[in-house]
Amino acid sequence: MIRRGHGDQVPRWLDQYCRRLEPVPSSVAPIGRHWQEALGDIRRVTDWTRHFDQALDEQSWRTVLNQWWPRLLPGIAAGATHGVIRVGHAVRALLLDGESPGRLRELAHGMGYWASRWKPLDVPEELPNTETTIGAALRVLPLVHGRDNGDGFDEWAPRMHEVPGWSEGVSKVFIPHDPIAVRQWLAQVVDEAVVRYFRYGHGDAIMLVHSATAPNAVWRIVPALEQRWWRDSARAAWIAMATLTAVYTPATSADDTGVSGIAPRPSAPDEAFSRAVEHGDEHVIKLADTAVDVYRRTGDIRALNVIERAATRISR
Image (cartoon, rainbow, N blue to C red; front, side):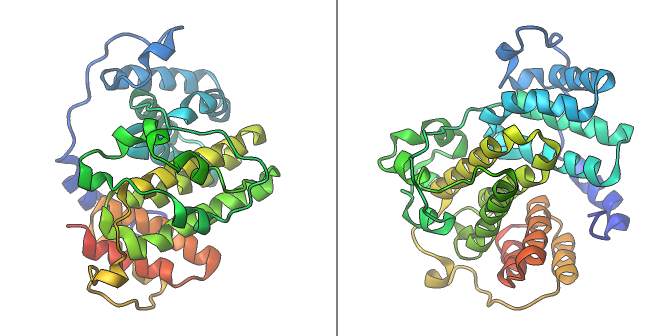
């Protein structure tokens, strides 16, 4: 909100949002040499935050991020991808605005939350000589309709291999090996997720927001990573996005069912983002932040129309 010119509205927004937060848990024990045992244990969130606070006091934030990135990345499903999303916001601020105690503290909180909610994602082996586009791969993915059968993203993320055709379908895309091309490809994943929300977001208006914001978080983080992690990062972001798509995509699109009840209309980026701030829901604002990035990168007006769609689908 601050970056997009709405800093004056942040205090009021925080006053409302903070009422929903739970007290910070007490410490259990310091994170030590056997840190793997504490991964995915939400009771240890305070311990993890303190661990990263100390690490960031002793080393540069880029060093800490690159040390822990390959450890955290397999658990990108953490908290329905909220872990990587939060780290993405912290890293963007550090890259664009420089270091400050508050920004380093937020990075520690983001990494601590990610570690404490760590959950493995089902990552199948790559298929050789694959060249399917992102859009084509998504159109043929098997859907599990998690909202209908009672199992959501957390349940499906580590066991998508049980779905017939999943491993083959999700492995059909071609991810470049050149680092620069990898980041451009990752941007295309974000672009596709945003545009798909317009037609399919009613499958689960909140969860499908993350199909766009999670890969966008990775897109924002990779410039701070050693290039050897870029391709693995893009693959993890793609599979997280594809899993969210498979679990929450409805059987029919909004254009077929009339679910949305609103026609597309052009809107300037600033006006569209202001609509999200006026709405107030954090998911609408997060999606708007990503959608504005997509519009400025592609000029696709559908990216701005998505903001209005989200505002009509998600309760204030």
